[in-house]
Length: 248
Image (cartoon, rainbow, N blue to C red):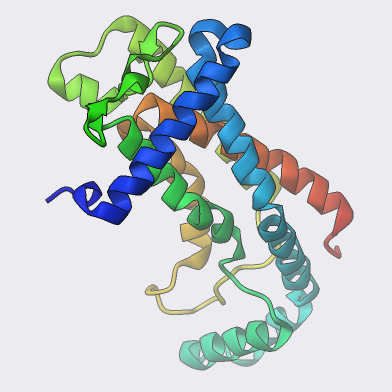
């Protein structure tokens, strides 16, 4: 069963498709054949601008975690022989201070519905009973509805698609790695000796590369959204680090 056959989701898909088509037509005199790609970039920037408060909350949480570093170190020293107690005391400290070990995940999680909607828009040949003209739009000659892995498995992958989508995936991974290196937590998000069932630090580190992996499977349109959003994330965090410096 296709979830987008349900009336509420079908209406949402039609609204997204109509809005994106209208924005593409508006940008056509300026962007030409890349108008649809420019529309996706514009939508991404709008979404990220709306999520600035989430980014500020994330920066404040990172500042709090850095401030708590000495107390976390003391907890690790005191409860080194009792991993369960150590984990419980650490999470209790985060709770009292209003910090979250997973604050870095919030912007990406908040955007998941947008990425899913973009994926659906460029997946359906017909929407609300009319042809999906967005599938005819291209970026550098590559249809915005094409994906690297789907095209490869269907035997429809051509050199242009491989080059454009492959470059986009590499750029997403490069920006993610740069972000990870610049904003590596000063203290472990999970205390030393904690059970393996809670690998927060590893999860946050791998999250950057998971975005590039997702771009391998989704349409080029959704991959473009991901590239713009990870680039925005890097720039925003650089700015917020100056506004909310973490103690050394």
